[in-house]
Length: 187
Image 1 (cartoon, helix red, strand yellow):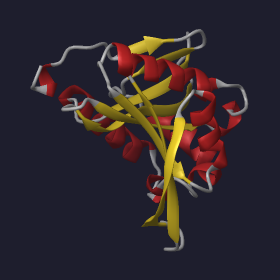
Image 2 (cartoon, rainbow, N blue to C red):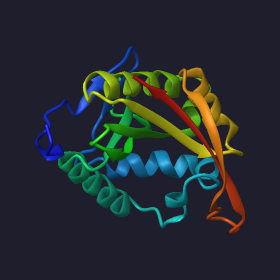
Image 3 (cartoon, rainbow, N blue to C red):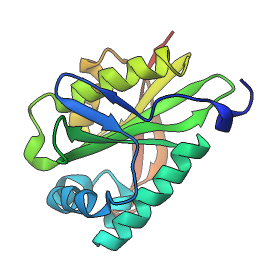
Image 4 (cartoon, rainbow, N blue to C red):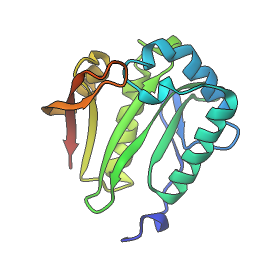
């Protein structure tokens, strides 16, 4: 189908422990709490974590993300503990090129839920969704070369390191040049 907005696919998927779903109106306060708890770990890697954080600002983020999901321009996915409303992080399929189709998985996890393989479970499920349901030919994970925890998730999920883009950008913290690792799986 040539028009992405006309593509029909589910707005959620489930794993053994997680409900992975598109954002909805009303998710802002829970997302704010998850981000607030995790700011120390997020700020070195996520420029958006430097923005002012309020339940209202996060509600606006959730509503824009819902609109983007419906337009098929960006597919943010929230990670919730199955059977609860507890948001433990966020992921999704970004930098979409429907002509290939190609997607980039991004992710972060709430600090109190790290070390329990939730991200590995989520990334594996989202990767399978991209290849199976969305018919992806390429799925990438990109991260700052210094972000060893993010790189470890990519490697655990079977993504191959294709290369390092040297001096590919500047740090949002200090303006220093950074290197970006590019991991990928292809069909």
